[in-house]
Structure formats: C-alpha cells, structure tokens
Length: 336
Ligand code: ADE
Ligand code: ZN
View 1 (spheres, rainbow, N blue to C red):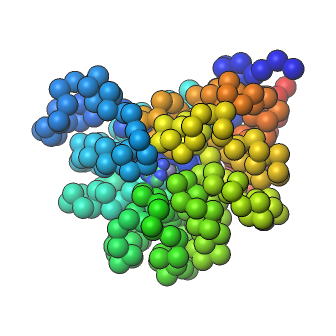
View 2: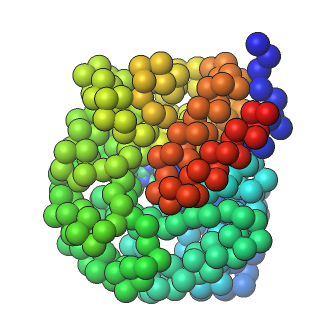
C-alpha cells in the first residue's frame, strides 16, 4: 500500500480538538501587533524571535508563550489572530475546531474576558459563513495558578455562557494535579459546560485517572503517558475516551525523543480513540495537516489510519449530531 500523499492528508476532512488560540500567534503577527499597539519587544526581528523557539520542556515554552501574548490587546487583535488560524486551518482540511483560550493570561494584563471571547467569536462566526468551518470555544484554567483564580475566571466567563462550549485545564502540569480543581469543574458541569483536561503530557498517568474520576473529563488532552499504565489503556479503550494527541508538540517539548517513539499507533492498536492535533502550531513547526504528514513519515501512518483519526476527531467533538453526520459523509466522499 502506498503512503498517503501530503495533499491527500491535507484535504482529509477533520476536526481539531486541541488548539490553543494564543499558540497560533506567528512571529510576523507578533511584530505587526507590537507595532500597532506600541508594545516594545525584546527581539529586534521576526527571525530573532523565531530563533527562540527551541524548547527544553513545557515550562520553557510556556515562559515565552505567556510573554509573547502581551501584544494581544484589543478585541480586533483576538479576531485577527483567530481569522488567520482559521484560514490556515481550512487550507489543511479542518472543518470543525474547538479551540482553547487562556483568559487568566489576559485578565492578569488588564484585558477583560469579554474582549477576548467576543474577538474570537466574531472570527468563528465569520469562518462559518465564509469557509464553512464550525467551531466553539473552551475556557481553559491555568492549573499553576491558585484554585480561587480558576473559580473567579469561571464566574467572569459565565457572562458569555452562550459563547462557551466547555472548560479545560492547561499550563505547567507536574505538581498541579486535577484533584485541585474538582469543585471548579463540578460548577462548570452544573452550568452544562463540556469538560476536558490536559493530563499525562509531562505529568504521570495517575493525573489522567484523576481527570476522568474527579473532573469528569470527556476527553483527555495529550494523554501520552497513559502508555505507562496498561490497565489505564484498557480503561480508556473500554470507556471510549478520546485522546487529543499533538505529535509535533510532544517532539518540540521533548516529552518524546523522536517522533518514531510517539505512542499514537500503539494506543490506536490497543483500541484507544486517538486524534491528531497541533496544540500551539506557531511554536511547534506545524498545523494539523503538518502533524498528519509528520506521523506518516515517522510512524508510517496509512491512509486507513489517517481516515480513522479524522473520523474520531469528528465523532469525539462536541458538534451537533447533524453536523457530525455531515462531516462524516465528507470523509466518505474523500475516501471515494
Ligand atoms: N498551554 C499552551 N500549550 C500548552 C501545552 N502543550 N500544555 C499545557 N499547557 C499549554
Ligand atoms: Zn495543549
């Protein structure tokens, strides 16, 4: 069987379920917004900024990620950021996106959560009209900030309840287990919000169990360290929990040594539902289609496996049943 071509993988209709909108801030837009907003940057050129994108681990990335987003100031900045991401996303076959944003990283700089949500929403509405992409917004709590801050930001976000799909949990993982956030997630669930959580990226497999048992997570973001716990792998498969995996992110943050070590296919073979996503594509060297081509090259992902991951991304999304059906028939047409 021949390997799927770049264009076949790019045109495969798919959903992205693990994408931080602030992680789509490309160096050229950083400079554009810095100029517009009068923000002085510690780098003299786009190239010098891009040269910083050599990370030792998650924290070294997060430090740059939080610093760089300081150029995002106005509703139109968030709309423009999201518009650019959605344009690239469409060119790589994305038909539905559920994107994270980190409101605490903006409110800490004096930017209102409504400014952020309204900007992102405007671009999503426009993309639905112009590109036929559907989507939603997931409010992510910073797990390395106090639990009370998560509660405060949830209350603030509820002023735009109708624009939110769910809540998530991100930022520095080790030392910040899901159990800390049990009450905040219970409140979010009571509001009818969907629940997902980053777990098992750098943190242990036990954090994945906590996310399921204590937060009620419907999907696990990353989850690569599940492979260290064979009983958990069986459970994930039995309970049909989808993992939103991000191969290029794992490589660039050195949670794996080489892409050939990525557990994607081992988990797929064990019956776990896996999906392929880009996490913070501006920082990690590729958008979702690039992640598909990278795992084809490193792991030998076949067209049949790629199609399964795309179907899973649609089925595991929080889109309506009607929208899922529509997108699954687009996948059927892609297969021909
Ligand atoms: N925030 C943005 N990207 C992240 C990642 N890969 N892990 C945890 N938090 C994040
Ligand atoms: Zn992430």
